[in-house]
Length: 48
Image 1 (cartoon, rainbow, N blue to C red):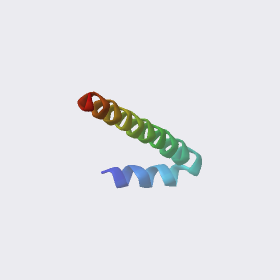
Image 2 (spheres, one colour; image 1 turned 90 degrees about the vertical axis):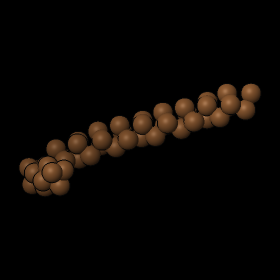
Image 3 (tube, rainbow, N blue to C red; image 1 turned 30 degrees about the vertical axis):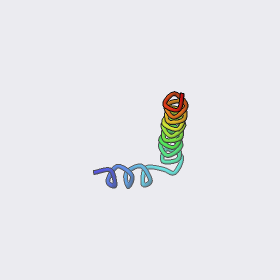
């Protein structure tokens, strides 16, 4: 299902595909950052 969407995006134009890729990439980085910060805060709290 996702592969079909990606194929449509790339066939529709590289600019649109780049926008979708960058937006998802930023969301992915934010999620990793949030998870990492939560883990560090949790580890600090558990040690105390």
